[in-house]
Length: 231
Image (cartoon, rainbow, N blue to C red):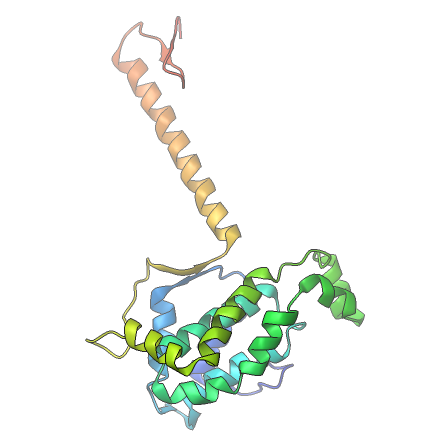
């Protein structure tokens, strides 16, 4: 997808960011992953040289923001999340060039409506969007995220205050945790809930069977606590 948008060669930092935001199977982002991206912005250049790393990352995110019809809703949402995280935890030098993306963020806040986009899109892109349920607007979370970013970009003092408040006095960027969720989709949250419910059901069934085995003739204890005679 990014080759089509003009990214023929990618640095290690770009590949890391692209893989995270464009892979729709990745529905959970940990705080560790977000902070790893932020920490990379403090390196001047990639190992291979070339552009400053934070510029590379901003270029990737700009490609997403400029082409909302060509990327998935999840890619857009994760890209906005990463952009806000870089604004708050990335190197100071990143803030000024990040502000040049404000018109794109404002456009997402005002216009990112997947139902409208599906109707306006033509050719194969429009057909696929409508086939995937384009008549339903799924852009609300992206507009909300863009609105929060726009507030920061519109107020230099507010952004500075947020950066200072969230700064870790012991390191450039908080380390984060592989078990601490920084982002999760509703689908992934539902899947986790289903697994927990299934686990609880199995534990309850095992507990009931254990009770029946430990009390000869006691029968089976049903879910409401009543004994079933003869069970």
